[in-house]
Length: 152
Length: 152
Length: 152
Length: 152
Image (cartoon, rainbow over all chains, first blue to last red; front, top):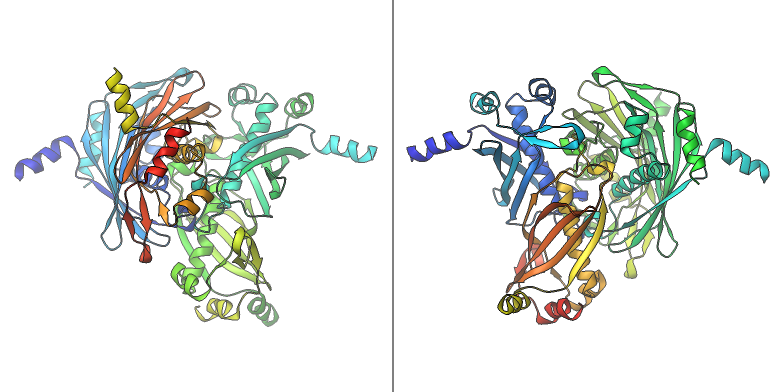
């Protein structure tokens, strides 16, 4: 158990974020349940919220890491239960793995009664915007990663 | 009649654009018809398409008019008929008025059978992005307006 | 002044709703500010929130007013200030006019520092879903309107 | 090789669909490239388009398979190249596996110049809408699957 905990600490980060999301009328499809692409908007917002919690606001990111961006290179969700209009949910997010030039965020969408609605991950690269619209991957700086440990 | 035509020519532009849009599953709400904010995404795309038709691609805009943008200052639609899942529509757009520092685009969303679904306008300002996120309105250059006359 | 107050009471409703909305990364366009159609999603959610506050949850609506719906027949916003990524806003909504078969909701989107971002109205019809996808307008029942007065 | 071909025929379907999608201004984020959740809207539309091609319009589905629905139980994409504003893409979709009570659709988003933008799958269950909002999985009827073979 202690091993697991250490494992988590070296490969991921303890800092966890929560955002609240209600299932609105416009989030639902003709079947009356959430249109699943909406979940991907929510988990993207969950990742950005994590960065806010780590002190990395948009302004700070621009100042500290100019021209850097973190586009998703993969995103995946399993859907466990339908979410009808009016339901309140929370999106829980945590970096579960820091790689060399990318990192993976785990997201869970939980209904107010505790039922799991969706679960999955985003993998994001740490890239520099180059002239001509190209992106070049860079090693994630330690000063960025540290913020996800200090903050909790 | 000649007067009306001249009036149109001085206040608006003959260049008209059409984009096609199907009502997708995700565009619809639990009532099974289009979720109305989707129409506003469509008319925004209609305005950008007009600029493409006038030769003003994103690259061209950046090169010819650096730091300039055209945010909406007002947008308004009337909804005439419901649009269910699967319906094919077209969005017809035209600049109906060129003001000093703003212009107004008229949009119509028409169902394949000719029924009018939505009609309205966007007013957009011609602004410069200033340091600190402020926007400063400028007179719309003649070289921009002319493209909407030459192109047709 | 008393006249104005009476006027408000007969034509609109005092019940007001507030929902919070952050400007997310995905709400913004390449200019780095909110993509304006997002505001229309927010005000639609503002109207539904008003109905929740009046006790009219989706289940309640279905039970009390079966086959009835309230599609927008017009929606209009003016945009006052740009809203960049990360800004917190509130959407304030109130029925400002009860008509015979329609009603008008006024919405304001306010930034956390009090600046007005967007303001406008939605007009919604009270309709019955008929066989074949047609909609028939009905007089808004007093039992519905009363909930917007009792609740405040 | 013949074995592979037979394998494909028994586990998937040859019927393939293509829809066109331009990257609009509103599809892009402040980095100026497509906001990735948009891809999930596109692949959902790709699946529905496949059903249209197989003759299964919304009306037909309701008539032939009343109360049945096909919610996603998993959805996953890898992102290969950034897609800036103005790019034209096509979304190619094909059922790559028919399971007992679910099926898997493979999607590819290709830029006009042939570059692969996104690739992945959706898994959808074949479910009946039960009273109280519950969903019950059913075996996918042969009459449904056959349409994806006959149609090509």
